[in-house]
Amino acid sequence: MNLTESERAEKSPYLQLLSLGIYAIAGVVITLILSMLAFYFMYGEFMNYKWLEADNPNFVTVNRVLISLQQMGLFLVPALFLALGEGKKATDFYDFRTPKVTLLLLITGLMAVSMPLMEFSMQLNQKMVLPEFLKSIEEWMKSKEDGAMVTTEALLKMDHIGIYLINIVLIGILPAVCEELMFRGAIQRSLGRIFSNPHVAIWLSAFVFSAIHVQFYGFLPRFLLGAGFGYIYFWTRSLWYSIFAHFLNNAYAVTAAWYMQKNNIPLSDSDKTAHFQWYGYIISVVLTVLLFNFLKNKTLKADEEQLDKGI
Image 1 (cartoon, rainbow, N blue to C red):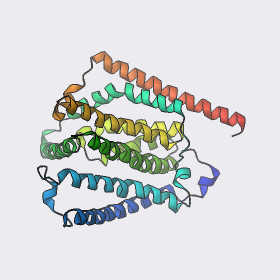
Image 2: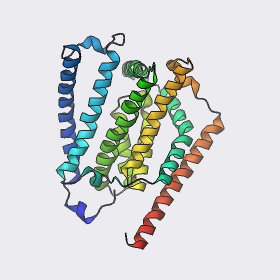
Image 3: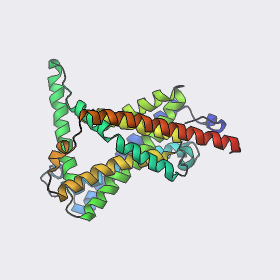
Image 4: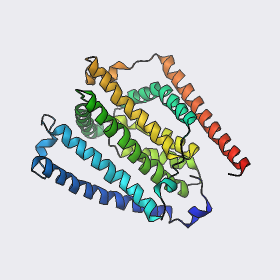
């Protein structure tokens, strides 16, 4: 974000990124240890690879444990330790300014109007075909995507409202907080100190955000979402807003899956339920650009008013 005199005393942004990498590796190791301890208390075994088979009765629970601990160990803890290493509170280091209702409503509208655009980017991504000499890599990518889809569909099977609420926390809230702290708060912030152009920091951190999920046929929409979250954070200068936008995106996916199951629509048909005419995509692009521009102007105006008041 904007550099201040107090930030000049910070460690080198290159050292910050290196520290994040070290913290993340340590977090993964600790996550594996905690996972095995949790499984031992739950099932009497440290690890059984049969649990990772989709037809195993422990598959969903094991994946919930792994995903939740991974979010904290790989993303949350490294970001918190980075702030701690600078001798600052995370709320100050990452700009957790109190959100305003008007901006939250604006971001809600922004996420809604961008849905057709995200769907279109997903369709483009899923049509990706590699050259013939890379067919073996393409087959591997598709197998990884199929495996991820099996896990996703298993996690999104919700028999009652309790499982829906668990998924809202596990898939909606937890990734929104942990991933925004890491990718927008820590990585984008450090890259912003390296590059004089904030757009480079935003798009580069969005690339890392999408790539680390290792879902090749969903890379483009996640890349665009990451950039959108990055601009929200950059303009509002409060991580609460990008966390909120991230939560809305994930919670919508969970709620849509809940709706489909309540109406006996197979989750495998989720890509067939959303459909827009060609002009719907154009309208989505126009409205998304207009709302992003409105958000930018509104936050800039608020900053000018604060400067006039001497805040």
